[in-house]
Length: 235
Image 1 (cartoon, rainbow, N blue to C red):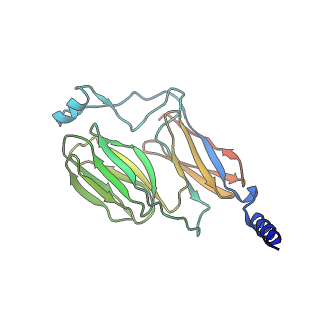
Image 2 (image 1 turned 90 degrees about the vertical axis):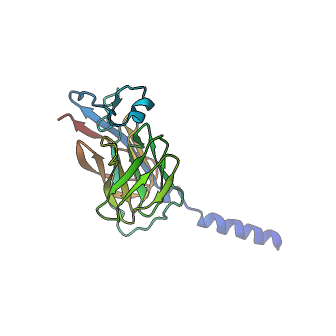
Image 3 (image 1 turned 60 degrees about the vertical axis):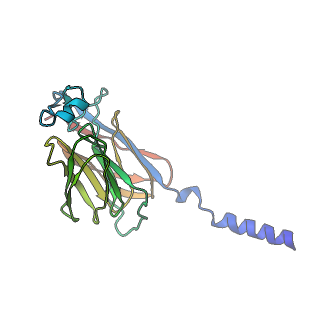
């Protein structure tokens, strides 16, 4: 009798296990760059001798346009713009981190979910201030000496929120705030990957701070990876 009960439980468990058809698929690709590469813009940090010292007095390259050696773009924010309406997703409890290091924001572009905490850190031996220019959520503008941390959130989705430092005019970064976790940022080879997207048809948007936004439709299957590339041209 006991053996029969065990077998019955095992069969019932197997019946409720999700099949491979119910698993999400992935979307991956590149942000290609066509045309002449723009001259690398240099940042001069003369306004703050402590920033200059952190870089041994050398000029620092701007991260506004970073064309990788393989003719792709870094710091392109790729996310699902349409197709997830009405679906609810758990908000991560782990904090995203925004650091101020070398008088630059790190990372330069990143994504979070609405109401996910961001821990803002100042790793520099100088005063910074963090000024978040949000339209959909309550912004903030706070001073931050070295070693101090602040935790902030954005209540509503918005692509993109610009964050700047009023003390150091060259400092800026961008935050994509979404109501779902399906986003990515292109890396040093121009690659991105969005994982475990439920099967369906979606509109993807790729956003770049200088070259703007472009969209593409993709149909995601229950398993496997769809390849979606974006191409930007020099202006």
